[in-house]
Each structure stands twice: as structure tokens, then as C-alpha cells.
Image (tube, rainbow, N blue to C red; front, side):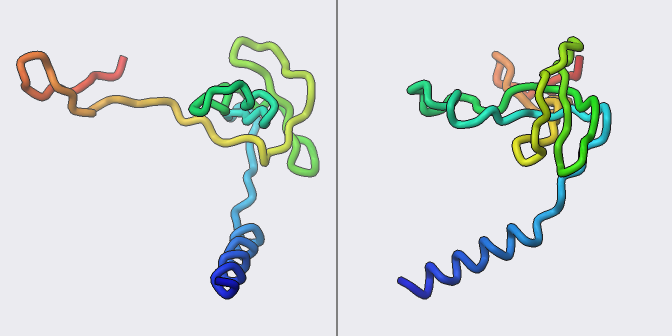
Length: 109
């Protein structure tokens, strides 16, 4: 039991030391994790990532400034540990079931 805990924590430490640095460029779309305060609303499966937001400026010490997609600035710098890249949903070529039971493909709009 103790040996398993030691190995587990050593692996976590290795991951933290060797994980890739997240570097965002100006114009990148990101999702923002606003923290556990908003997540404590009583709903277990609530979405905790908000966005997408646009990176408008990269500051030193892994900090960026964001604005919403309609151009409103957020107003405070955000650490990159609270961000993840935004990937737009692309449903082109995903098979779906039609009402007749035949498979169709969803076309991207």
C-alpha cells in the first residue's frame, strides 16, 4: 500500500516536471476555467469551462489577457494554467441514423 502511494506520487512529480509548456499566440481561441467558486452550484455535471475567448496579449510569467469573441476585454490577466485550447466542433462525416434506419452523414454548415 505505502509502496504504491510512493510510486504514484513519483509518477505525478515526473508528469509535472515534464509536461509541455502551454504557449498561446495572439488570436488563439481558448476556454477558461473560472475556478471552483462558480462550480459549487449544486449541479454535479455543470460545465466548468467557459468561452471561447481570444488571446489579445501575452505577458511574462505565463500570463495572457483575453477578450470575448464580440470584442469585450476581460479586464484581468489570466494564468495559462487555467486555459485550454478551444477546438470547434466539426461534425462533417459523422454517421447518424435517419428515421428510416439508414445511415447518413452530417454536412458541415
